[in-house]
Amino acid sequence: MKSILLHIDHDTAMTARLQVALDIARACNGHITCLQAVSYEIFSPGDVYGAAIAAAIPVIRENAERLRAQIEQELEHEGVPWDWRFVYGMAPQRLLEASRLTDIVILGPAETGMDGRGPSSLVGEVVLKAQTPVLVVPGDARSFDVGAPMLVAWNGSAEGAHALRAALPLLACSCKVILASVVEAGAPGASDFPLTQGAQYLSRHGIKCELVEIPQGEAAISDTLFAAAQMRECSLIVMGAYGHARLSELLFGGVTRQMLSQPRMPVLLAH
Image (cartoon, one colour):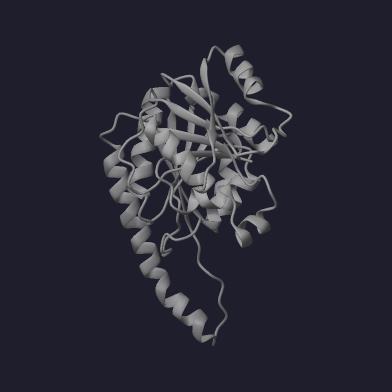
């Protein structure tokens, strides 16, 4: 992961994902691009709401400049190459534009002002539209050990295969890779790409892995995966995102939505 795109915002996970970006950059001899997008809503004269936005613009600009100064001061002493991009516009669009020649995009699980009870729409949009893997970092993450065990959630889907390929640079650094499949009791195996196919792919890249089938039980699949990763002291979960229609996942819930609502560790996603 040589080219790392880091989203800069005032949300509660900013400090955590900055630290994770630094840890990955040091381990991979990478470069961090800090992208700070500020959006000013369009307003028309005489519009009360627009006048309120206009009055808020100086405050928005001041807060953005303060955050930039704070993070730049921290970066100056980290010994990691970086650059800063300050842009106007909606964050998802600006991140997508900047992601075209990056190896990984690092985001927080919730946007500024969210109560943390649901997944970020920004994460969903970037994951679905970017050709780059997205690393979602929870606010309580203190560091990222690239040498620690890592768990790949495998279901044989196209999204899962994409995530596996995208995660190769990080998986190659891990001391142990666990290729895990959550199996519903009594359900026949329907995957065209079973665990052994994923293991063969990794082996061709010099990565050995442990194959694990985990009974689903009564717990949600997200809880089962987090528990399995925590029990094995993993630093990362890798998984395919939005295997079903995203609208369906948002309305009825889905593994991606569950994983992003309250992530317990960094999660690498690809669609």
